Length: 83
Length: 145
Image 1 (cartoon, rainbow over the protein chains, first blue to last red):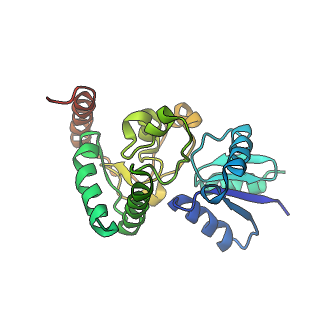
Image 2: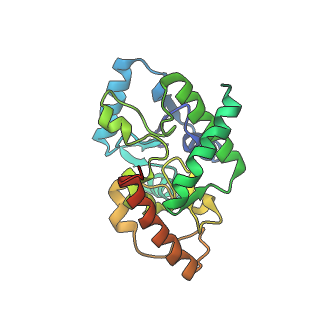
């Protein structure tokens, strides 16, 4: 089973839609609300996202070692199928 | 000022600006309500209605690029998506915002061409929208005294 991590903002509509998408698929995922973390953790999270091509816009989704930014079900499907 | 009245005020302030850029509020009333509420709450906390879907940093220049409506700072990217990042605003000819993809700025060039979904094409009306956007951008760059 693939490991799914959603980097989100608690204020972000598309982060909520992304969580709902994976919930409806019955897929387990970890989720971290960036804006609810302390400064040191935020710095570490931003470094992780930038290493995966992120720019500070949310949601940022990691599926195993592949990353994508934004709510895009087609892209989610591609990454879930990827071997 | 309470959050509900501030949401109405933000709507009143944003509407003429985004209209000149060729955008309108999302047709989804629920989405609009949620996003305006988040912006009003962020403004109550920070003094500025930042985009609710972008992370703020300690860099003021970077932060200014995400003050709503942030369309002028990301025009090519948002035009390619036909919506702004948080989805509060969509192109005027968009009828179904749920069909619009959200993709990172790095994909802007590769996504510019090809069929776009969720759009009602209106020919001359769209040309007028483009002209209006140029006038709007010009006004933002050189506001009347």
